Structures are given as C-alpha cells and as structure tokens.
Image 1 (cartoon, one colour):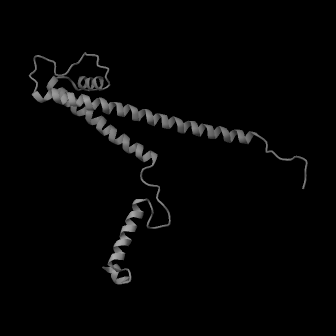
Image 2: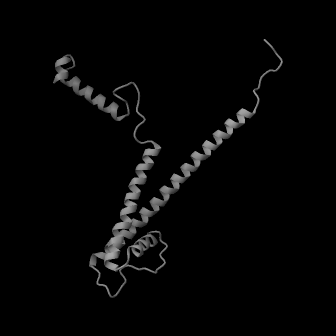
Image 3: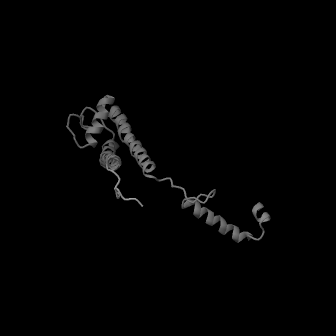
Length: 170
C-alpha cells in the first residue's frame, strides 16, 4: 500500500507484474542490488558437498540402524554388526556371519522382510557411494593434471627467448 501511495501511476496490476518480474529475475540469478548476475548456488564444489552430505547421511543410516537391530536381535557386538553390514552390502559375504539364521532365536516376522529391503536398497546405496567417490577422484585428478599442465606451459614460455627480428632498427 505504501508503494502504491508513493507511486500511484503504477496501479495494482502494474505492482503485481513488477513483483513477478523481480521474483523471476531473482530466481534466475540476477541481483536486485546491482547490475550483476549471481554465480548461483550450485557450483561444482557446492553440489559435490551437498551430494556427499546426502549420500553419507544415508552412509550413516544404512550402517547404524541395522547395526543396532543386529546387536539387539542377533546378539552380536557392535563390531560384529558393523562388520556384517559392510560385508553384506559390499557383496563380499564371507558367510561367517548370517543374520536371521540362528535356530535358538525366535525372530519377529517383520525381521526377515526388513532385512531383504535393507539389503536391496543398501546395495544400490553403496554402489552409489562408491560411484560418487570415483567421480570425485576423477574430477580431482583432471583438475590436478590441468594445473600441472598450466604450470609446465608457464615454465616453458619463460625458458624460450622472445621471437622477433634481431639487428633491425626502425
């Protein structure tokens, strides 16, 4: 209302259109304070950190929650339970620990179903984590090679004499 009182020529519809234009410009990265565009939030580093945070948080839940269940229902130590989680999800599966297989324990009916779902999604999650780690290492390797090549080119350009016509004066 204050804006309409100060600038009555804009009108209600004009004010609405102006607000929509400002919102669209802001969402596309234009800064309302200057004539610059913002870099945007999703740079390589910020998107990599975000992806790593999401994946490791899910790293974390797919190991800790099952570890607690295995400790409770299988009677394993924390070390044995985390060992089983990694061995199972990495598909190594030595067979030295097998969940839901002790005849002396009366398991709840939902336990084996929950384990099957955990293994199914856990395999995909661990593959994603390994793939993401490989992508990050490959990007780091390419970056380091680029830096090394740039430094080599700078050193080579310093060693070469300047080309030009010697002995001629203008």
